[in-house]
Image (tube, rainbow, N blue to C red; front, side, top):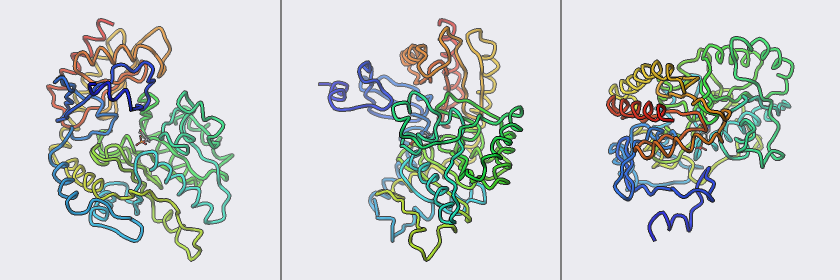
Length: 421
Ligand SMILES: *Cc1c(COP(=O)(O)O)cnc(C)c1O
């Protein structure tokens, strides 16, 4: 049996209808933006392998640091013990995120980072004998696939089988100049019961790269602050340079109480989640009463290998060269926007930093299940480019090692494919 056949015999893939999944490709190696399959074909990973890869695949600097760490300390229980990589990573991260963020809580992925954030907010109220159990979230949100994260995500095909079991959440529209006044009135009426507001800043990724304006979010955040509603800013996708600045927070004039990170945190090499919080949140758990402890932890909390990978990735990210690459991608995208906008089969072109998205005009409505997505995926794979449309929404999230020439090639293929569809 070849690798595909052996895979089919034993593996169940994510977000995949296994009945029709006949084209699962064995990848044997990665380098930079390229992935190589078992037949020697190479593919440009224009989606950063589900938005995680920052500096390209198998980056030698990260590989070296992780390998050294593996020979020194691979894992230690993080209750009662600590280690240099975890301390250093927290120190370094706190230096580059909003200055009100003072403490770092480690977990395993984006979903768990969100679970921890929600538990912090609910227990923050509980520890002070306040009865606040409602959560505010945005329509079309995506915060992960565990039950808490699903609960605060927009209701969709993905959450449908679990509908009855998800906790109640108050959903509001993404803030715009037009609806802000109405949103504030609506929130004001229920603000006493609301523990927190969770949002993906600037870009709702999984919903189809829906974008909204930093000024409008800042204004809503300011209002939440006045209403004493805690804010959870989910930067799992937007963090570490994707928006053209280090964090979406750098586009905003208000600071959240809690932030969530994962995906690009380790440069996309090893799974890890982080939930950071303000001193005020942390202090609400300090007590002689044992019941006020945050009873949450994962076996691999602050795994030293993941911490080192994150440290190494952040070293690369903060290099002048890398920041210039991010600028270059953003600039090249902006030029390509003007071309896409003129294309008769394209609408709703949008860009934030290194993230570019547009919709294909099709007879079916805009949706994750729009069939054109699958056709486009196949066509681009034939051309050696991994683009994974969300239905009829196409997007580019390239790793920062992508060169101008590589971008030009991707753009050229996109126009060719659009022309013949
Ligand atoms: C991907 C994503 C998550 C979930 O992260 P996982 O590591 O896949 O669990 C949460 N929030 C946002 C904004 C995401 O894009």
